[in-house]
Length: 293
Image (cartoon, rainbow, N blue to C red; front, side):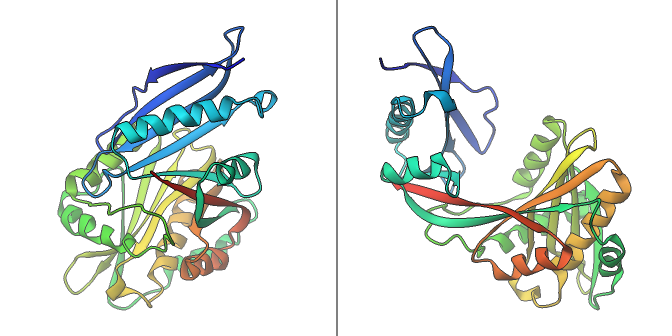
């Protein structure tokens, strides 16, 4: 018997995207699976949708996932999307499911964690304090200070050449409004956003950044969002400098924080080397899939 699908409205839709949702239920009305389809709405990504699909372990291989996938893809086509992306842990049932339904692997991601109880905090602190001629560090919580807002938004182009392999991810256009909206979204979830930035001494502009989001209660694991340096300022060790400072500050301000997590494209050798130098331990690999509609 086919599951019953109930379309839902997701109240968490924001300025950069909106989400559609479906719940699959069995004959007794109990939920057996869910699907979320994120439709990007910002300029440069209006061709793209992102899929999250989950089926209860006991209900797999009964057509639930296929029904949810069909509903999500129909909605993506109706919204005139060109590509649908989805992510799965390597070797998982979701990995096999997506590969069997026409999705192609476009990007591998390495996930890593720094357990703070085992970290060499003295060595990390030394890296954070090491001078870098021509640059200084600054930091802030939440939204970027007004005097840095424009150059910080401009520095986001440092992410444009991040290795994305064959992913049709489009172009993320950052301006001050979007930077502030992203910070507001983190605060709205009750989490803490801390940003460390490298500033050029010559002109006072932001040339690199490292973002860390910590749970509101300061416990569990924090999550690195983006760490990047503008191409013309690379080769000076700024990424490692900023990330080391972020780690040290997180430890000082949140003593009950257990660890810090990060994910990096498998082809991004420089950032993988930064993580390795700071003591991050790989935990698993994930695969980014894409379906061309």
